Structures are given as C-alpha cells and as structure tokens.
Image 1 (cartoon, rainbow over the protein chains, first blue to last red):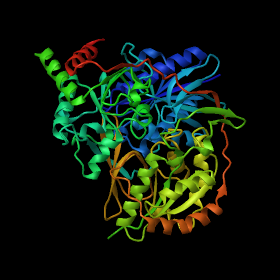
Image 2: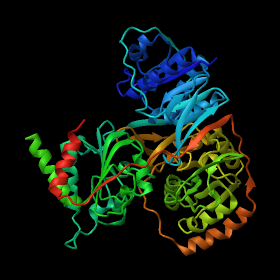
Image 3: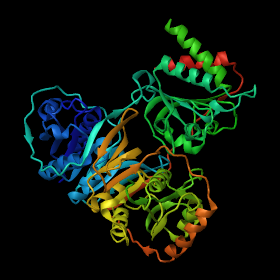
Image 4: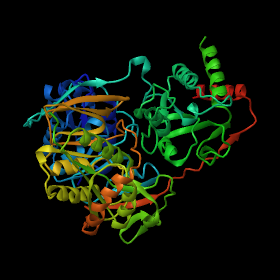
Length: 342
Length: 270
C-alpha cells in the first residue's frame, strides 16, 4: 500500500503556505483518496504552526520543520529540512510543488533517501497505482510515466490543480528536529524591476508576446523601437497582461541594435524560455515557428498579428491570425482600451 | 588577486529545435524517429553555461574548463565541430544514448563518476556548471543529482549571473517566481550552478580556437568510455505528440480599426 507525503513550504511571510503548496495538497488528497492511502503533509516554514492552519481541515498527519534557518530558500537548509520530513514520514509517494524553492532541492533529497524524482508533472492518474503525465522536448511530446521503485518524488507544475481551500483551524503538528549542516550561503534579497516596470505577471489572464518584428525597419525605412515600446507598455498598462518575448528580440540588446529596454531574458517564451499558463495569448511581430510556439503549450486561446500570411501561426498554431501591421493595430487597440476605461 | 577555478560544464546534445520530432517506441523504449540523423546542437541552456564558464575562466588566469557531454560519439563529434569554434575547453565525452527518455538518475550517476575521476581536478576549486533544464527531458534534476553525488551542498538553479569576489566568495542571481531574481552570497567553491540564459551573447566562431580544441577533441572521442544507463524502474505507459492542430481563422481583409475592435472585444470576453 502506498503512503503519500505532500511537501509544502511557506511564502515570504514565513507563516502562510504558498498557493503552489496548496495545489499540491489538493493533488495529495485526490491521490490518497483514489489509492485509499494515508496522507501526511510536511511543512517547511519559520512559523509552521501558523502555516499549518490552512491545511488543518485535511485531517492529514502534519509534520513540520520550523525556525529562522528556513526563512531563506537555500539548498543546504531546505534539503536538510525536507530530508528530515521524508525520513519521518517514510512515504512511498512524495508530492511537492514545482516551486523554485523545492525544484532546487527535490532531486538531491530524493537521492539522499534512496528515491527517484520526476518533475514538471501536469496530471496524476491511475486507479491502482500512480501514473504521471509530463512533457518532453520542451512541451512537444507528452508521455505518461510510472516508476516501480519507491520512494518516488513527483514535482507538480503550478496551475495543474486547484489550491486547497478548506476551513482554517488549529492544527496539531509534529515538529521534526533537523541537524543543520554548515551554512555557506546567505540569501541577500530579491532583485526585481520597480513595481510599475514589472512586466512578468504569472497570474495575469493574458500573455502578450512581442517578437523581433517590432524593432525591424518599417515601411518608411526606419526602425521605431521607442514607439514600439510605448505601444507595448501601453497595452500592458491597459490590460495588466504579462509580457513575453522571443529570444531573438531579447538578444538584440546584446548586439547593439534597437531594443525594448524593459525586456530581459526573463521575458523569453519558448525553447529557451518559459512555458507560462494564461487563459489567452496575443502574439505580435513573431513568426510563430516551433521554437517560439513550444512556449505556448498552456495558452488556451491564441491570437496573432503578423504581416506574413505564411507565418507559423497560420498553420494550425493560433485560433485567429490577423494579417496586419501590429504598429497600426496596437495603436488602435490602445485607443479603444483607454476609451473604454474613460 | 584572481581565483583559480576548475569549472566543469555538463552539457548534452539535443535535436535542432527547428526539426520535426516524432516519437517511436523500440525494444529499448521510446525514442525519436530517425533520431541519429536529426541535426543536433548543444543544449541551449547548457550552452549558456559554457559561455559563462569560458568568460569566467578568461577573467581568472590559471583556471581550467572541462566540457562533459554524454551522447553517441558520432553525434558528439558532429556537434563539437561547431561548439569547438566558440570557446576553449577540454572535452570529456561519454559514449551513451541520446535523447530525453533515459532516466536522469542514471545519467547523473555516469556524469558524477566521470567527474570524480577527472585527472587534475581540484574539488576545492570546483564550479559545476550546466543548464538548469535540458531541452530534451527538461527535468532540471541531473545537475543537482551530480552535485549531491559529489557532496556539494551549495547549489543554485536558474542562474543568470555570478559575480566572483577576490576572496573566492561569489554572488549568484537565481530565477524565482514572478520575474524576480533571488540574490545569494556563497562563501566559495565547490558549488553547483544550473544556468538559465545568463547575460552573454553566443560567441562568434573563432577558427583558431576551433583548431586548438579539435586537437584534443578527436583523441578524447576515440577514448570515450561507454555508459550503459539503468532504467531505475521508470516505464513509459504512453508517448505521443499532442493534438495541436487548431482550426486557424486567417483574417486578411480587415482594417486596423476593425481588427482592434475585435481584439478588444476578445480581451474583454470571459
């Protein structure tokens, strides 16, 4: 019989679980119910007792590692904490959110406890055993996998399960002691663009992707990068969309060409970038070839604006493609959005 | 004073992203149709790691750079013809299977064993580099497992920048949620850094560097040890292309104003 452990961690406050952790709790409850297996939830937090309140109503056994050492996301301390929880839980299946914090350590911990890990899990199925879906080749091939060895760690992609939202209550937690290793790494903080310049918004309904065409020569023989920047930022302001970009456009910044100064490699979508989850996506000035489109795997409703009637988007990769000049269209779109707001 | 670094970059080879991929299942499990004849390139994020490593080594005289790559010898040779022209390195090839379907734990074991046996490697000076995920399996676990097997407990993933200080400590910027970087300071080597894109553009081809590299690459390929990767209980229940074809409506005859009206309505629609 399987024994399920869900690993969770607190957010920056140190006393509340992250949304991705609560999604993993939902997955754990579903798998435990399907396999009729006992469920344990492990928590890593500064104040685990406070964080545990959010999962008190699950009825699961709660194991916690608490303390200031776990305020910072760092390999040495996080791996020690999760290893201690795993040893205490003695689980055969370990589910965890695919957050940057747990992605950094899950494989190392799996190795320490003699287990194996698979990541970027998008679905869990199987009536008698656990079967996991994940993508290969940057979201181009989908596979369902299983493992005959235990413990088996599975890191779940964000957004694949609903966040657990049971009644908050007082929880009975079992504190696990951790033998801390020597700490050679100190987290000094976070670097992010100023709030009004932040263009990456994972929770946005819409993804707006800017391709290299925005900085190419226009019909007047000139480039118009500044105007392109204003149109793009105007659209983001009006819609609170998240901004994605092709690698070629971001790379132009390193080659001394006209660039959009607010774009960084963090904005890259596709083969060498991210694969975000948004309900809608609007692509502009991007040719829609496979290296870009693999980043759109989890964008449900896709539209594109392109001057090229033979671009990749027209070949079954977008729902609607407008063959038009994105400069002209986006100027009108912004006008209408601002008029609607007024 | 500059630090002497021993940088090992783990980098796989992947099909050129413009190639059409079709999964097939053979006696050894899933693979890609015509996998051995598909043009291959160095894994993109691992290539970032290689370029960052070369820049770091150049700034720190006396440093050494190894490129460790597991794949079929013939494909490694093909890819190295291009990669060798970018930056100077010593290739450490491992002759093994290609593709994203072999188990990451087995790959990591083969890599760790090879690194542990590298002649001249001083682990107190070791920076273990690679891509934070591959473009094949995309699991983001291999480098971490190699580090764990080598006993390295300062690990960073999604790295975009490293600033090495004179005392041997260094600051790392790692990607975290929400378009932010987490900044950390590590006391020194050894450490594992899984790179995202970094900040360097791809170096231009330099035939002189290429010729110098190829003098050692060909003998290294000839001596490459063979790795047989265990499945570790991993089985594939299905491997398939997604149903991705959409019924695209191509709009050619609308004015920018008409298109804008339709786009705005679409944005507002639930």
